[in-house]
Length: 433
Ligand code: NDP
Image 1 (cartoon, rainbow, N blue to C red):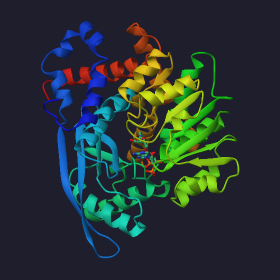
Image 2 (image 1 turned 45 degrees about the vertical axis):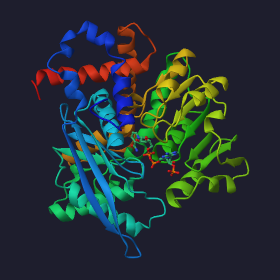
Image 3 (image 1 turned 135 degrees about the vertical axis):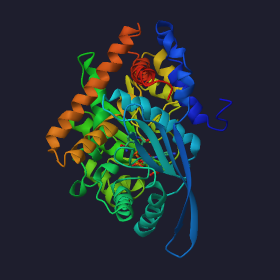
Image 4 (image 1 turned 30 degrees about the vertical axis):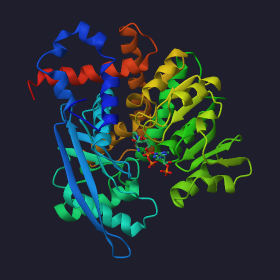
């Protein structure tokens, strides 16, 4: 904490991992040797750079760009880019730290990283987005490569932005090096299912949680926060599995639709028109828009926070518990505060932590890298089946590790220990690096 002042999200992520580890260190004292934990807390490299760009009126703006290359022990650095005004070094470090253990849980050979900029895409034209992405990549390209560091999307960075970033990379490097970035369009080196993967993966993870009690998503009432990439495809897969998603949101408020979210309309509003969520309610009789208030006051069986960090605190958790929630799974990174997680644990609500439940996106990015390396492209169904299997394997790792340490169904503990031991064992094998 002394070493990283002013980085509360980073401190929160580190603390929440290490509070799970007392039982492991007792069994394996070797993990306390050679400053292993201290090395794990320190990123291998942090890059901060100026991103100057010109808006449509000719005015020059300056943003701050980041890439935190956290750990390359398991493979090339891998993790998304976030464009949001709240971005700072502490947020990128927390996301990079989480990414290391999430990537370890996938079982695929990828290290951990994260990046982004304190740039606000809201209200910016396509040309402004392109100029910003080009300026960002002009610096970032020095630090990435298919064997070094492979970025992807995150909040504010979807397929359009990945296209602008990759286009600039190609110009500067004179190479269609498709393995340098993931989340590409399928015509230019992308993988089918990558767009859907994080949201689908969350639904697959929840299906595994429910299957523990011989139950399924069929007939469940579900709320999903956010209405971006993760939320939209979580909603789609939940509804395909028979659940009804009755509410979703953006930063302006939330909509409740007792008939179930009409996916085509939501995609039209959010993906095509890039509009605000009230437009959904404006065009759907069964829906109402609520600005202010909390989506977590809507009673449900399953809650999937898919917007941003710390969006679900203790009081929201208690409200969900009063509303009868049985399962919570994190589609976003660290959306539930530590006190929120504790409230769910005390109420016996099963809880799927983000580093396991939302790992389907990065896992499918690793599948995109495999396709790029072999100059191949796989069918949708094949890739989707691989994703489903990977999510089931991740769930199995969390479940079995939790049981091994005497706390069955504590998937937070299971995910933290399984991710940590894989990274720690590899670091021990590689010497003091
Ligand atoms: P998008 O930019 O596509 O969507 C983000 C959604 O969350 C939007 O609806 C946005 O609303 C809302 N949101 C963002 N910030 C806030 C805020 N401060 N308060 C309220 N609502 C907010 O991002 P993604 O769907 O890609 O990412 C969502 C989360 O999932 C993030 O935590 C990300 O790190 C995590 N994640 C994403 C993966 C991916 O593959 N995309 C992979 C794994 C995790 P508005 O438009 O109004 O800002």
